[in-house]
Length: 153
Ligand SMILES: O=C1C[C@@](O)(C(=O)O)C[C@@H](O)[C@@H]1O
Image (cartoon, rainbow, N blue to C red; front, top):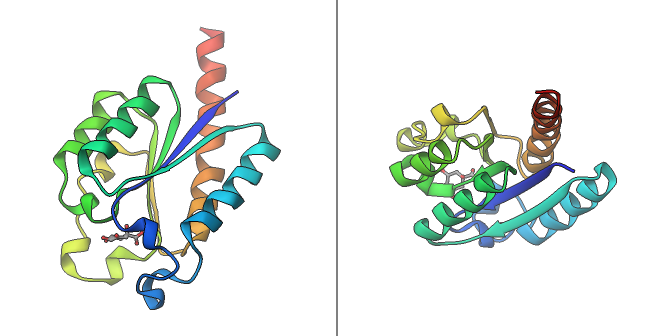
């Protein structure tokens, strides 16, 4: 069974009430519930986490990567500031997708740069909370392919 860890960084616990014009009205609990149903239907082991602390997010990445899980990560503002988060993804050789609810490229200049993007498989942004579903649908076949290649080796 493939495993996916959906990791959320600072302020994402406020999704649904925080700047609704930018982030929409869907809450993180709504997203978690939807993804859990999706994962159960697809036979995927899903872990869903949120933290406001950079070091804790690093630990969550390490735990996911070392367990061989794929990572969907919305690191929030740490995307634009954190070398530690990039190093964690790289350090455990994680298969990761960077996710943003908003289109960061249509926003302030400081949101255009991501420390994580070069160590992720790809980036999904600008599709609102539906981006979580898109990322889940994108990462599962990659993990299945990786698992099949490992068992054939
Ligand atoms: O906290 C966030 C949320 C965000 O990651 C998004 O999901 O659109 C975009 C970031 O720039 C911002 O700091």
